[in-house]
Length: 328
Image (cartoon, rainbow, N blue to C red):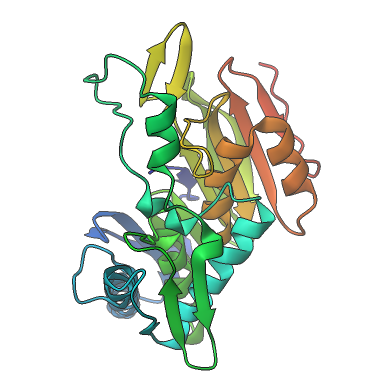
């Protein structure tokens, strides 16, 4: 799983001069840190809305968790290769969108990555590379093409016994999106759902300014090279620069290509801007696997999606509609 980097949101000071104020709560949900920020008239209203967001995120976790033996996702995995499992329409739609992203990225993103054998170790215990045969076998049960959706009967079937799906690459982004949608429906004019780096925003700060996010280079974390406004959009930054192994002079990172079983290389940070955190999350994962050239090309073909990439030499690359001055 990708390590999520916390993005810094810049809030303007002096909000007490406005009738509405910014309220924030930090808590642990889905096994990760969530920061929920809302703009409200007072603390009572704010915390009522934050409680709603927490309840919605917990509902999503119950639906998609593969750790919960009673979840619908676990039921799908238990019956892999045996029978189709009836699930609710929300999970059907989430899996459909995941398969579409797999098609869009030529399989670089794949929720059946959960079937992969964990043959790579990035905790310092690995002394030699796995054999080519072991690597090939590690992904023998991975393949989004083997996820069968029957919309008429509302069922999901995994063709191969032992196959699994998991939402680690999009789950928190999806939860952030759903919490945002719920709060908007309840009349919350502005806020931020930050799910361990999967961030979605809406509205503006009480002083009328946009929310802003600082982008840092992992090779110089103490200095932001860009401060970008967020206008009713999501942003996800993912990095792979801390977990890696070196064999024969080559650096292998912990982000594995689900098609080949081999680790990705070349990119150490990817920031993706998109209308939904779910999409931004999936694309950030995919870019590491696709590589700089293919990743940028794919992003440039998508409407309302932009990205900033940093390679393992510290060079910064952006998609076509982002302009930043990278010279200091």
